[in-house]
Length: 395
Image 1 (cartoon, rainbow, N blue to C red):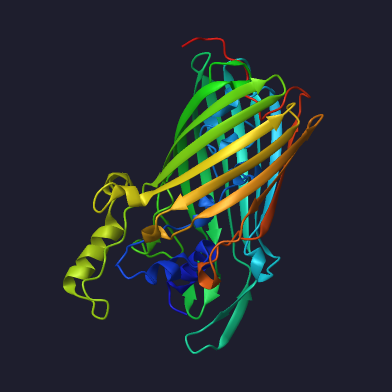
Image 2 (image 1 turned 45 degrees about the vertical axis):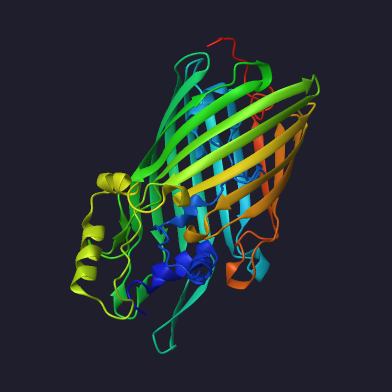
């Protein structure tokens, strides 16, 4: 098996045929790819039911994954949550899944701390050499955990920062190549402005820079490392309260990967000196400069992903959700509709989400026909974490 084949296999597994679908297009395209793409999977069932929106939605125990700056505006002083997401469930696989857990604690009225962990199991994989000879079986796995701090800058404004450790173990020894666990350290910084009305009524917005960190590789070759999925997310959410029992929120997120596209070969059948030079420049580019490089070349609109979602709440106990996610055909063409529901009873919130089957064959979404399950616990027994805390500051 070639040195890069392990990474390529896992990448194809995660994106569920994005590359195959995109290459079927008649026009040449250049998909932006990264290492550890599991960090881009929606990590909680509530957001999953709304098309994967979360940057500016009402804060809850899973806000760590989307915008840490939302934490100071939760009603509860302490909460924890967990979500189980089957992966490629439509193919009958039961050992490939994403498991996430998160929680926070308010130190006082201004300061909060939070943490989360993500664990991605890729099941058992049979490795072979280039001739198809079986070599060994291995169970790849990836995980990331982080710790963050948030501070309330005013009655309506919050700032959050966090540090994340990322590890990816895809193989041991394949042929004569020894693979190590790929590791990286990354940070997030986020800002959130809460809606002015009680129960989160009005307009809120947020900005999140996530996974800002070093490249990740699986060998000692410094040039054989890939960017992690650094991302810029911007979100808005508007909540209206038509009566004392109902609350409706409309949310929109736009995300942009801060990763440059790899160079396109001049000739697909021949590696030229120009191709080699471009590849070397891409591999040796600093991480910071790559963030700015990601905004150059081509249509930037094609590089954006958009998610829109609606959440209806009745009596702060029953929740219905729906949403839609859009990605341009040049970047994978992932377009899907989602539905979700939630139930709050005493200190427990239970959330379910479902992704409507989309695509066929290699173009099928990995979460098609999948039911995601999440639960959060309000450790103070207070109000719902799906309702933003009141803000009285008119500014």
